[in-house]
Image (cartoon, rainbow, N blue to C red; front, side, top):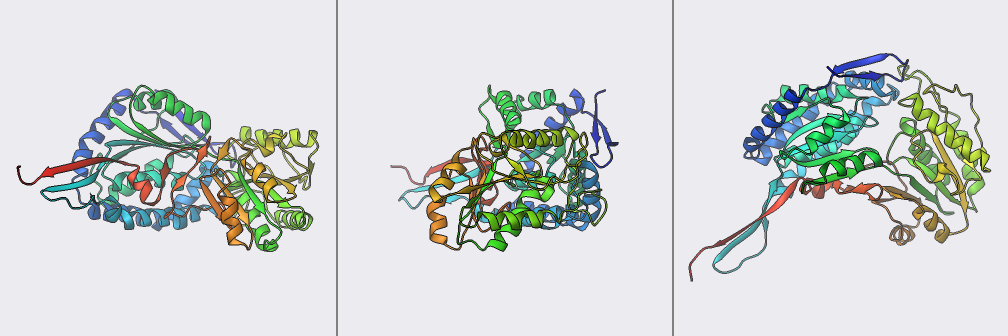
Length: 460
């Protein structure tokens, strides 16, 4: 029997250990999912939504308990983990339930004498959801809820770092009366995931993770004509114009850069500031960043926890070291303990795009701040990336924000905010940030296929 161990970054101990699914268990899950979906798709959308609302409420009612075990699994401070369930998870689940009936209803294409014509949004079948560890509840809800609302069954494969999230979903769905087989989870290794993707009973794969992970999903699905939704991360930029509210921009960009120790696909990883306000922005940014308290994430006073693994922290340390070697200046230089996942925040200036810290994902508590002379230079630098998930502008001029946003290659364009998913808007990326979308009515439709009905009501 193959086993999966979850090493907690809190103290390096084994927090969870699970036996991976056997071939027989995978086969049973696929059989049950396919069988259950045929009945589930006949359930009215309103009834599906009612069950999913109860599931969300069940999880939120236990948010503190679920948050503590999440802290143990991936290291985010316990002062922050409940918010993942109480705010983002709850908001997204309920919004998708609220719009489901309208978004999934038949599309009337207009009257034509002697005919009845419409397009129905049919469920795809069995959806495999592959979710990451960094925001396991938030990333999974983006696919699990709309897929089920659309009439699909779901098999969830959660990252090995946060396996208890998948198990808690199953507990919640059982408690609120979801029919057996409609939602299931499997603990699997990479080879097993590739095998299940290749199975003809899987109709769609919703993946959130790294670019190499997305490439592996595409490779596994290459021989089949199925859809894949890929959310693959980013190197998200911010541009601070000279007319920005300086204090507001500093406060929000510090939070956008360091929340969850910078382990967010849409976190702020590089900042471009107009030269007129560059120095006061940097001074304010550094002053606020110094207020972070790195420490044991189980202590309520801690607001910066460890990275998920020592290896991840070492990768960030290497980026910082390379940037300094190429001429960057580290402004904080706080006490660090190498070879541990506990990494203090850092601010780098005198940076440029020769440095990996400005071009490759850091996924850690470091940000580079670069001065620019005008909007055109900022646009060029923001677009100088293989990623395109989100980008933000900080300004009082909405017309300028729209004008600049039209020229920036990104899935979401923010003005005066960052690192937030509005469930009414499509969550999507361009370039190596992936393809497809979740959330919004478009995200619901992504888990359906169109079926046209063309009925001649009277013979010629």
